[in-house]
Amino acid sequence: MREIPAASGQPAPPVTREQADWAIRFDYHGMTAEAIGGEHGVSEAELGAAAEAATAAHATVGRRHTAGELAWLDLPEQRDEVREVETLAAEIRERCDTFVVLGIGGSALGNTAVHTALAHPFHNLLPRERRGGPRLFVLDNVDPSWLAAFHEVVDLRRTVFNVITKSGSTAETMAQLQCFAGLLRDAVGGPALRDHLIATTDPRGGDLRRLVEREGLRSLAIPPGVGGRFSVLSAVGLLSAAVAGIDVRELLAGAASAVSACAQPDPRRNPALMNATLQWLLYRRGKVISVMMPYSQRLRDLADWFRQLWAESLGKRLTCSGEERSVGPTPIKALGVTDQHSQVQLYVEGPNNKVINFLSVARFDRDLAIPETFAGLPSASYLAGHTFGELMHAEERGTAIALTAARRPHCTHLLPEVRAHTVGQLLMLLQLQTAYAGELFEVNAYDQPGVEAGKIAAFALMGRPGYEQQRAEISAAARPHGEHVSPIP
Image (tube, rainbow, N blue to C red; front, top):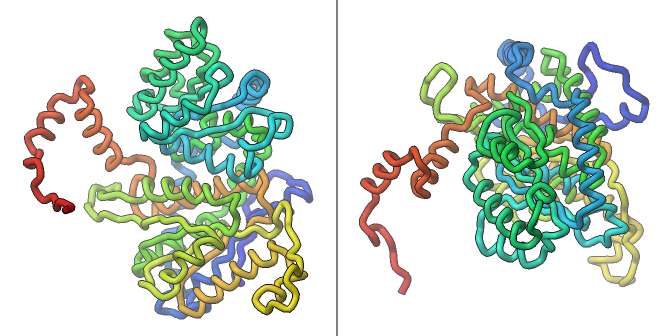
């Protein structure tokens, strides 16, 4: 097994013995030629040849951070912001039954991932005295049936909404805001918005910031230089976590330990840099699909968060030098063991164009024994005396064995357990991995021109002022109704 210790950076802050026991391990043996052969795995010689590019990627990320460009790397060191979030969260926990995030993309996926990982799996179903605070909902779509149904099951008088958009102009979020602000005024009246709306947005500009000032709303700032998909450890993700009772200080401490772990320019001592390098090398060998497969129900939504991070950051038509390449690995999600019965057949015997990224948990926070309820039944009785945790681990190991035998590259991030410290580590490791990969692919990992093109078209179609020319162009290009449509008899 090739394993990188997570705490290899120098200098590193002192950690307690307990914190050292929480270090995530990265096992990349399943990506090597030694494990799966030279045709599909990376050899020691290839790693050596890539060391210069990897070191340069590490240096560029460090240089950009020093220049103040990568403010998301400073989020683990927040102090005043954390106190502000904790104070506001304590107030919300006391006075409302439901807390709702209005956002989309980077303003929602991280909130869901952290909540699923660290809150009770059935948080919203617990009685108030057990959950200790409000129910949490993240409304990250504008499907009218879904939003209308939500309105039917919530008491707006006991609900607080957190509207999140850095630009203050995200169409989906601003539509949600207008909808629920209107409903709040009807249901509550008086100071409805001041008491029931919290805005998380740019500290100075944008329409949402102007609304904050006009209506006297409570607000939190998204730091300049922190883009949406890198914002989970800012107020964007911390407020909903704190409202749910999650220890946000431990979350940030875990992220800080990951930054220290990735201080070294040598990929063999830097887990995020090693994974970025291997993913880049394998992409050049035709492994263009990246599957994230947690073997933990708690981590399932972290795969959704990673999909945006990997896709928007690396999927680019142009390189930084303006060369047209259209690069980027395609991220997809799977869940162990659920998707062993829906996806693994393809991964093992389909096209060998994927890298499988396991998220593994050494110790579950609770376990269940399997009793011998049906003695003498061969398909069931052999399981008696084991636990569901043992079964989960056996299923995961079995999948890895099958992938190795089929010469399919795979790697594992092993979490000692799922807790705020390890989740914070993992979030930061994956963000750093993405930053390094952006340099290796020679693309800007922080813009999203393809997304912007769709936004502009939507603005035009909805009649936003300033987009009249685009609306005219869309109308001129529209095909006749019914052309190329196959009717269903």
